[in-house]
Each structure stands twice: as C-alpha cells, then as structure tokens.
Length: 437
Image (cartoon, rainbow, N blue to C red; front, side, top):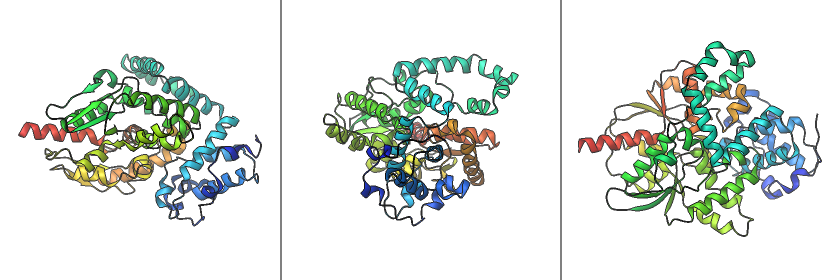
C-alpha cells in the first residue's frame, strides 16, 4: 500500500470551518448511489468527509483505499441537495482528488486514460478535432463493426468491448463548422446571447448544438459563438487536474469577453455547472477573479433561459409520451429542476410520465463509465429499470454523458426507448407551430 505525507491535503482542502459543516446526521445516505451499492460507511458522503478531515488533520495518511474511495464517488452531488446543513461536499472530494492526482495514486490504466483523454485531447481544440476525425473514420468505414464481428475486443478484454460500445458516434460535421460566429434572428433582436459549444458536444453532439442555436434564433436572440472558445474544464477539475481546468477557464473568459451579451447559454449540464463556478475556481487570481465573477453570473442552461425569460409564446403540438431524467449537475449543482419541466409542460400534446428517482445518477459521471465500468453498470441498471416502468417513447435529458449512457442502457437491456436532449424536442415543437401557422 502506498502512503503519502499526512500534511499533503492541508494546502488544498477548504478551510476548517467548511470541513466542520458536516454534522454527520446521515440524511445523505439514502441519496448516495455508491453507499447504496456497498452499504459501507466509507462509501457514503459523511464517511468520505470523515476520511478527508482525518487526512487533513494528520490523523490518517493518504492510502490506496482513500484514493479509491474518492474515485469511487460519482461526484453527482445528490448529497448536497439532501444535506440540511448545506455542506459543499463536491468541493471537498474534488480537492481531495487534486492531491491524489498530484501524489500519483490510482491505477496506472486509469491515470493513463485520464492523461490522454483530458490533457492531450480535450484540452486542445486541434487535438480534439484530429482524434474525432480518426474516430469518425473508424466508426464509418466499418473498422469498428469488423473488430466487433471477429471478437478482437472480447479476446483482449470484455470491458474494452463494452467501453467501445459506449462511445458516441462522431458527428459528420462539427458544430463550430455548422454554426457561424454570429447568428442573427429573423426578426427583431430581443436578446444578446453567447453560446458555449463545448468539446464533446462540438464533435459528437453537433446537431444538438445546432438545435440550440436554432431555438435561440427563433426566440429573438442574436447568438455569439466565439471560435476561440475551448472545453469548459469541468472534466479536468472533477478528475483532479485543477490547473488545466483553470487554464481552460481563462481561455474561455478571454474568448467571450470580445462580445457584449446578456446570457451565456449552455446545453450541457456539466459544462454549465462548472462555468457557473469559474468565479470560485479563479477567486484568488488577481487578473481573472472579477472577470470570472461577471462571466459566471451570465451562464444559463438553455431550459433555464426558456423558462425564466419565456421568449417563446406559442409552442407547437408534439404528440409523444416522454419522461425526464435529471442530469446530476443540472439538478444538484445548478439547482435547475422545475425549469425544464415547465418548458415541457408548455408543449401541447406532450404526455409526460413521471420517472421514479429521476434525479438518481445514471452512472455516466464524466468518464466514470470508462474508468469504473462495473460500478457504472450497476448504477445504470437501476436507472434503466425505472425508465422501463414509465413505458415512455422518449427519455429527455440535458447532458451528453447521460444521453449516451442511457442510449447504451436501452441497447444493453433491450428497452425500446429513444433518448434525446430536450432542446431537440423543443425545436420540433417550434417547427410544428410554424408549419401550422
């Protein structure tokens, strides 16, 4: 077992006042997916907080067990919603991950995957495009199908086979090509908005980005889409690489400051949540602290914008039966829960079925379903059983990881359901209204 000097976390974790907020009441236990799996105290939020405090005070060393528990956590932050004391658990576990990463703990394969995916690919627009194009041809030229047919992945590793199945299809055209830097509405400009295309959203969910800008344009928005914008940095921060996350945050602030806008729209729960926290991430930076505060104040999820501003007065009829899954970082971090449902209820003909445990994590959690595939699948199984019970035709959810994870779950468990982003349905509603007017 590896050990690390006991003082390592002292300069990374929040101050003692924040660490002492947890009163260990246990109300978080029933909301924690990993505690539900193991029933071990150390796999619960309050158990992990005890471990973090013990390490910070020098009462316990950083060990492989400590590192594993911090990585076992989904960082879904459902415990924060359940907590009566307002404990910011996510801040604590992410700070612990920073030091774990710096200390070199964790499996070699997991660290290698994170290094390649986060530092080499997602942190660079050029490298992301190259990797996406390679993956596109791998998927479209039949190489992927051939390798699966001959069973090469299963010979190497069953997990590798399944992880390859989880990977989203790369878009034929990336959204930065589909969406101009400035999009003007057909009529009067009612709002000045900016739009964050993201990284994986840009290359794997380009049509959702296009749908978002189309809806904004139909809502009277002038939309700015800075070409210099980059990945938001959320995956880096959640996986212990806070310095890269800060670098990306600064690049985005620089890119968006070139435009004058009222709202910065995001359609990805994880991206929106982290961009709303740029002010905290860069609070100690003398150059960016105030700029980050102004940036974060303008960030809105697309459903949040539509529900609060109500730019669309009449939605067209959509005769479908749907259910809604709350993406963790939309519901628990951004506290955007009622707004998506409010917009959906405005669509005539839409039958909305209640999803049991709608805000229970689906197990995607960034790259969790790659790093911890088996744990992820146990959590997904619970989500898919609840979805099956709704008998809905469509599952709506506002995060790319959730979309792909639930699509994979539908295929894995043979459930006949389509999975789409709410904005795609909203766009169809607007088109239906225009066609009938």
